[in-house]
Image (cartoon, one colour):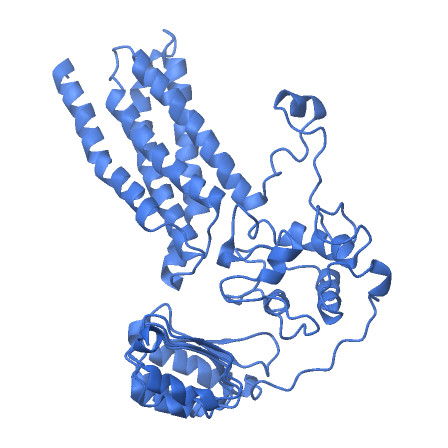
Length: 472
């Protein structure tokens, strides 16, 4: 191949790789991870990122080895395969970067390290494309610009991988067991607190509360060992941070996760006691459940008021569990075959709220909102008493559906945002005895319709942004 033809091929490859690289930058800029989940299908594909990402990592490292060895006369022929491997590595980098964005955007992640890792992956793809453009085909020499670009690309790959490791295993994963002398070389502290492994038996992280508080000695180490890796300043899944007492009590995108004195009503406790295969189970992403002793300690902490300062001596581990709350709904176990058949027929999700069979069922439509309409709600009438939470945002539900929902006697939380609902049937929802949360954002309701809800005694949270009622 002539020099001119080879140069044309290289720059043709670069031009071909430029549009997908720009697309990655556009996704990172215009659709950054916002801490909200965006559908089951997107999460399904996004979770292939940890598997695919090892492909370009290995191949880029191999390219560097082939080029370095091929620079010698004895191994010169190795350079003939380096170009092919570089091409595969570039394709793999694009696949890994896109799946990484998909995972972060759809999985409810956000935080500075998540954002930095996302942008680093996009820059890595662009650097790999540049390497393809600068590389000269054998038997010509590699060239200094290509050598510098390849070295910089591999260094960027190492940095990007380090950020991914921080997201997966925590900030101290790489340095936790680093020798003291090596720590001094990098200007690090001579010692780093190690992550706890079980309740009460680890070095606690700095946290709110006195030195002998139950929270500091028993609860903070549990959260640090099992939860903070996904819920700290750098990675805030569901907009929730668990790295300090103040942030724990602040809660996440769905509100507070701790209800002092009420473990059963605390979302944090509910999630750690769900079956591991439940979508809401924590820790998520395949991580092992909390040890039973850790779960019991968290339950006791919440039951005694979830205090940050209460001394360890005043929180009896053997305290009797609080009185069981009244059932939220009938036992769903006899209805399991019927629920499964409705899921298949309607294309909706009907999932248990917890492992307690009387905690009710959650109706989820986020994976296919277009399949839920008034007719689908009507078909749920035989199991209406089981449903305590209906997530109907962006569905085809209308006022006729609101009339049907008024017959769901145990409904506690209802999301009708971005639907065609008006004020016509809102008054019927006021009669629901347990409804405490209602989202009407971006609907056609007005102030008169909102006034119909005032007689609902238990309704504590109403969201009506982007409506005539809000502007009024």
